[in-house]
Amino acid sequence: MTKQILSMETKEKITEKKSESGKLLAVVRIHGMVQVKYDVDEALNRLRLRRKYACVLVDSTDRTRMGMLKKARFFVAYGEIDENVLIQLIKTRGKSLSGNRKKISVSAEEVAAGLLQGKKLSDFGLKPFFRLHPPRKGINSKLQYPKGALGNHKKNINTLLERMM
View (cartoon, rainbow, N blue to C red):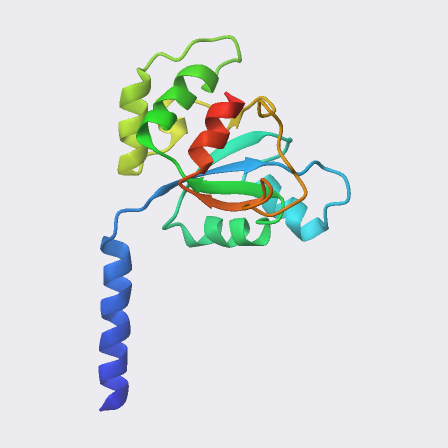
């Protein structure tokens, strides 16, 4: 009897988690490519963070990507991205799949709305990553978030992204 109750409780928790709207996380690689362990390097490659200051957008409900993010959390900065910053990121740093110099054919507002609904950048004909500049006024790239740039920034990732565009 208690097993049935426990299983019903866990099923309710799972459905609650699925019903929550997935938040869109911005993940920026801060650490370079030297002296990175193989499993962390593999996780960064699978996240498409192959270069320093590359940025990808990750859905927080995707368990596999969140596992890779957990593995690489000491080499990246991540947090929840706002819609305004997302629109600005797509306008300034978005590239089409066909080539680097091609302009995007869809408006940035439409792309941002689609991403927040669960679509992917490739559905709009855009590359799945953004190449950013080093941040203005610099960062402390060896320390965790309150003192440095690595780790979970939560909402403050938006200020870092604005400094990097």
